Length: 118
Length: 115
Image (cartoon, rainbow over all chains, first blue to last red):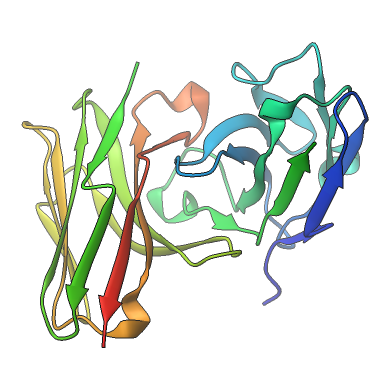
């Protein structure tokens, strides 16, 4: 079974530029998550999709971050304009089902995209 | 608001010694608790998942305990090996189903096992 795919793996940009990350979840997984992991910290949830609808985006800085999941499969996370403090690893995860039976709650993570803002 | 803390932030042990990693959380109303491993430049790999009704979970050399009332979990790794060197993250899943299965992570413990 193929895992969660993310691209690019690394990105270096200057502040005020824009950047986009792409995620392809495991086939059949209805729920998709984007996390931000700053160096030395645990991942922080930015946004959660159930199919193509947003379940939770309470920690997404909406003035500069946006995300979409068209057709309920692939997802794109965009930052515009980027700030120095956005330097982090952006992790995408997916799960078969959100809520309900516990066996469906396990999240599978992609390798992440390491963003450096200069 | 749930807060998850992992102490120590870093740990170095000689090969063969047992590892003890601690995790504490402030809100005991959790659905379950999960331990992950993260290798440099890679994503997270799930190690163990403990339901809120369970006291412990075991997989090979790994054993995780959960004391929900005191807000603590401990991950034990027996007879450590250099390949166990990684960052270990603890995450709790809240009870509110409307928020999906949102995970709140601790900051992780970076482990180095020296040969």
